[in-house]
Every structure is written in structure tokens, then in C-alpha cells.
Amino acid sequence: MKIKSDEITSVIRKEIEQYSGKLEISEVGQVVEVGDGIARVYGLSKAMAGELIEFQGATGTVMGQVMNLELDTVGCVLYGESTAIREGDTARATGNLLEVPVGPELLGRVVDPLGNPIDGGPAINASGRQKVDIVAPGIAARQPVTEPLQFGIKAVDSMVPVGRGQRELVIGDRKTGKTAVCIDAIINQRQYWGTEQAVVCIYVAVGQKDSTVAGVVETLRKHGALEYTIIVNAGASTAAPLQYIAPYSGCAMGEYFMWQGKQGKSPKHVLCVYDDLSKQAVAYRELSLLLRRPPGREAYPGDVFYLHSRLLERATKLSKDNGGGSITALPIIETQEGDVSAYIPTNVISITDGQIYLQPELFSAGIRPAINVGISVSRVGGNAQIKAMKEVAGSLRLDLAAYRELEAFAQLGTDLDAASKRQLDRGARMVELLKQGQYKPMDVIDQCISIFAASRGYMDDVPIAAVTKFEEGLLNLLKTQKAELRAKLETAKSFKGIEDEFKATVAAYKASFKA
Image (cartoon, rainbow, N blue to C red; front, side, top):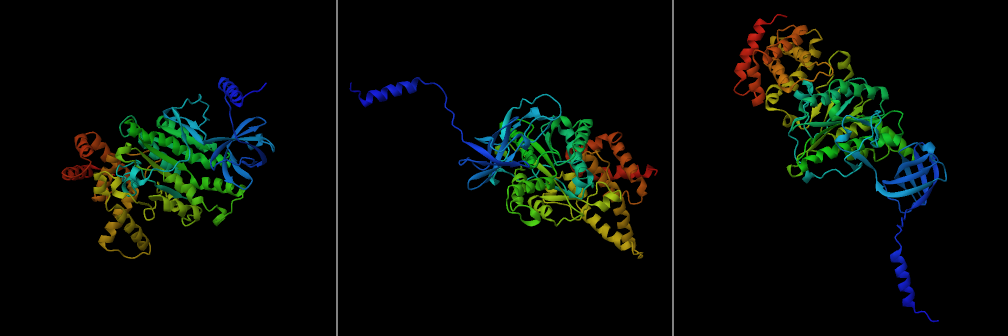
């Protein structure tokens, strides 16, 4: 019997059409080496850089990510226990990039860098997922930084103002109050929560002790700041790959809110604190050396600058067409013995728009926050200040710098003329006025009133020990008996037209003040 070829093909075609089973094709490789959070896999010839790999270990599935593409193997970092994987285990390419859960459901929670809750609370049913590592918005999608982000710290808001969308480095030796400055900034956003100006805060802890992070969580809860904060924790005991991706995960969670403005929703402003990027660089160095990448200066890999630049470039103020949302980044860098010219500090200084330098000597002398006015700078400056603050704080930096020089000169025991003595008196009072208690952020209008009184010379003859008492009394007066004058300043955000009234009020208060 002769069967025609077209009959055979039609029978096969029918059989194929009737077959409804789904065929899944995935690339599978084999683990040839594993340890220290790193795995080498043979057989994934089509794997892409950054692709997620699924490892079938003895105790379950562990996720990893391709970091090195070599001749016959791929080097992967593991986001889980490397002890669960053995040589010879199978590894499957997923074709996906690393994503984390995002959305308002994460507010008030402590999560790991993969977005899993670690605070003992319920599972997070997130609104969506977002890629961890993306390309930052281009210049056309941005606009200049003009809106202030108030820290509530007199020394910062007056002399190194930070705007929404800025990247301001907080740098100094350990135990100089770097985290405290950033936590104050988070607590100060309490006043805007629930308004159009609301700021979502993200605190990323890299390589910190779990007890330290627990202390931060408790502080935020006590001050009512936890409800608008997400805490991403990659503690000191966490594997290096998770410490490496933690800042990117925190940033991705923030980007969800930043783009809310494009849909006409709020909150659209975000503050990201990365505490600290020195430890992230150390974790990345560990990964790189284990992956046999060539070491460079201080054994860091050559792309350690790119590690931080691609993270901090994602902080931006979006253009009006994109909704005008913003991410403000406060990266923290720890210096050794005040060495600002070391490798990682200089890298991050060159990426950011200014730095707040905290000096151990000032901290030990009781000047807290211990901000060194000479080295600290904001490259956005007056653009990120309200008009009233610009009017009173314009010459503050120069006055303090001149005071520091005169103080050094006066220590030689030289006789000073009257003008120099006046400058020393005013400088000493200004230094005292700029001291501020931890977790006690101040309203920007109160800051303007305090600095107005000091810069116009009303505190020059007040005993240094009584400066704080003078300030508290003056602010109390303007909140009670002179509330309408304070309200005028709050509305106008400028002393123009009401300066004489303020001068009269401060002069009258001073006449009745008893140290």
C-alpha cells in the first residue's frame, strides 16, 4: 500500500494540534564549585549578566545571580545559605532579573534585602514588584532642585541646606553622630505626613549590628516615625551578596513612591538613608575577590566607583511632566582617623552634591551635632532654603569660620581690639545656639527666629550658659503672646516688612530676660 507524504504530514499536523500539553524549555547547568556565598556553574552557555539562577539544593531552592561570565563557567552570587548547595547540584537559568516587592504595604516594616519581613509581623502582600538594579532617569526627565528637605537641625538647615532630590553625603569617624543626624531628618518628616508634602523614608542598614538596628526601629516607633518608614536590614551576620544589594533594594522600594506623582498620587517624595556605604564597598570587595576579579587600589575592584555612582544617580527631582516626585539620598561613609582623602570617601564625595562632615574633636568638646562648617558644604545651597532662612543665615558660615580663626589667635594671649572681642562674643553664642539635643528636630520657623535674634546681636551679652534658656523663652513668647507675629512669618516665609516688629519684640523680651 502506497502512502503519500502529504497524508503523513496531515496526520502529524492533526496530532500536534490536538496535543495541549505545555512544553517548558529551560537551560540547566551543574554546580562545579560552591562556598562563601559564591557558586561556579558549568553548562549555562546562554546565561546573561545579572540573570537570576535557581539552585536546587538538598534543603530546597536557593536563588543566585550571575556576576561573572567566563569561558566555560558562570560565577554566581547566592542570596541564601550556600551550605544548602553541593557540588553537582543542578542550576536553572530563569531569564529574569532580580526584583523586590514594592508598595505602601512595606511602610512600618523591617525587611531583608529581598523584601521578606524579618520583624516577626505578617507576610507582606505587596502591590507590585520592581527591578533592583535599573538605569537612572536621564537629564531630560529631571528638573533643578529647589524644594527644601528640612532636617530640623539648625546647623544643617541654616548652613548646609539639603533639597528634595539632592545627594548629601554624611561623613565622619565612627561614633560621631552620623546615624543620629539622619534619624533626626527622618523624625522631622513627621510634620508633613498626611499632607501634599509627605515624605516616605527608607533606612537601609548595611553591616550594622542587629541590636543597633533594633534601637533605630524603637527610636522611630517612639517618635511616631515608623508609619512612614521602611527599614531594609542586611546585618553584620548577613552574607556579603545581600549586603551588596541592600541599598539597591531600598532605592527600588523608594522609586515606586517617586513615580506616584506621574499618576497624580501622593506621597511622591522619598528620603533614602544608606547606613553605610563603606560596609557595602567592603562586601562588594569580598565578592569580587572570591569571583577572582583583579584587585585594584586597597584591593577594591576597579568598578567600585560604579557600584556607588549607579546607586546615587537614581536620586533625583523628576520634571513636572513626570509628576515632580523626588528621591533624596543621604549616603553615610565612615572615615578612619578623619582621613577624608581615602579611596572610598573621595569616590563618594565626587558623586554627591555636598557633604556634612562630623568631627570627633567637636563631638568630644560637646558641640553636637559635631558639624565642621569649614569642610561641610551643600552644592544646592540657598536654592534649598525658605526666604526667611536665607535672610538670616546668609553670613552665618563666614561668621563662624572667622570666629574659629580668631579663637585660635586669641588663645595665644594677644590683646584684642573691641571689634575682635565683639566677633568672639557673637561667635561663642552662635556656637552655643547651634547645639541641639538628639531626636529633637526644630520647626524651620523657630530656627529662623533663633538665628535672627543671634545674628542681629541680641545675644551678644547674654551669658553663654543662658543662651539655651534665652532661646526657649523667646520661642515660647512668640508661640503664646506674640502668636500672630509668628503666624505672619510662617505665611510670608520672609522677614520683609515685619523685621522691625521682630526687632522690637526681641528687644522687649531681652529687657525682661533674667539669666
